[in-house]
Image 1 (cartoon, each protein chain N blue to C red):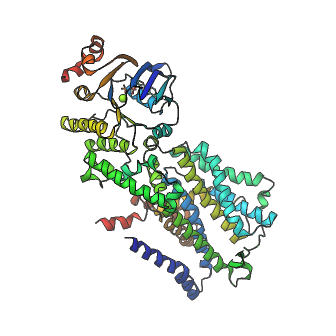
Image 2: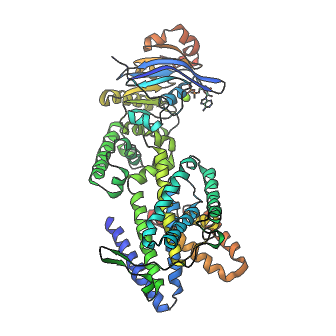
Image 3: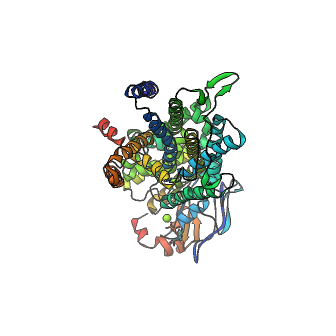
Length: 322
Length: 260
Ligand SMILES: Nc1ncnc2c1ncn2[C@@H]1O[C@H](COP(=O)(O)OP(=O)(O)O)[C@@H](O)[C@H]1O
Ligand SMILES: [Mg+2]
């Protein structure tokens, strides 16, 4: 069993680190680097949303933390001269701490009420970045440098991106690596006691507290891990686009993060990864049909959810059982 | 001997309604004490007050001499006072064994981070929980369904699972709210024996709410009778059966006809 998982992981690693770059080079479609980089980063934010689903909360507010993380990184780089790689964990931690203050009052809400409040949160974050002096309003923060190199004790870990022949490949590698770390963390959470407690919380909060689970603490902890992922994703995007605006992450993005989870499957750790990939490419493929894009896209989503309420990955479950 | 649990002048008001009215009694270590009374008498409310799922309007609950009323529910559970629910309450999408293992939460020595990193302490905890879960499964006779999904179980088994979850927390005192409701005679008798074994083998003090009067009479060391939120009697099963006030308020009705 464990060996099988390891084999899958090895296969996946070879595929994303070697096969994909090879295919892209052969086909000459260098723009795919950017697409796949986006998918990888968006899937990190979606992984966070998935984790809040895991404690039984519908989170439509991840855009807020992606935006916050992006601004933290952008401000630290542009105004304080920080190295991007240092701002990355700071952006994540900032979002984690911020989400504790936001989560404490709102995580008491359930169902539609929690979902609504988080939806509003994205908009509040956008308005905040419009209003604060430090975020420079609608102008945003632009002309950020490419990530510089990272050395620890003279050991060169990451090269300076401006010296790279093709920074796109660098960003792809960065995004894929971050995604793999994020999903490894998620997998470990779900399969450790923390995950079991989250499931107990999702299935029956009252019973969870009567077996001694500090439900408030667990909810806030989970939400802050989720927001940490959002912050990391946001900050990474800033590095790639070298800019950030209040409109960089909006309500629509928050909704997409949630849809990614639904589509891939809430019962599967790797659901949000697959969901992000499908949703992103699905949208792009439908671009060719012009003004009907939204209509067809939404209809397809509805049909998918009706027929596969447990996500696309549930297809494989059935096969295994029968 | 000092009582294990003291309920002192506890009152609960819901708006104008007084669900529990100035109720006092003691629970001694190692006894099975039942709370009986007609529907709406305030029994479930009383249990929620003891386990701190509701805040008291007045009065105190003491456990081992310390106030436990109006604390957070998980804190009260941590002290060793654990309630099971009137409704069947389990973790539906877990197997029987997973239900029991997750309920060992209070006994974990490792931190959540330790579990995440798979520290030695955490692995020792996991091993201990597994073994303890298997013991509970054995004690309650759940071997055959240990790997069944809880949502697939029939009523009788769900009740036992509810009890297993309570037991997994290793309580000093367990509050069972109508554990026999909806069970047939055989199932009830099996569970009655189980509850007695819990007390004898695991030294758990039991506080029981139950409508099945014959079962209550058989199992209880002492009985407290509630009516309209007030305590109207307290005593041994014999004393309660012969108490005119109780017979009038409760036992005199058709509930008594079940036969004692
Ligand atoms: N949360 C609540 N809000 C308002 N009234 C309640 C609440 N819980 C119970 N009650 C009322 O309190 C009284 C006692 O209820 P309960 O403790 O459930 O009785 P029992 O368990 O003895 O049947 C009932 O009249 C019930 O309607
Ligand atoms: Mg009741």
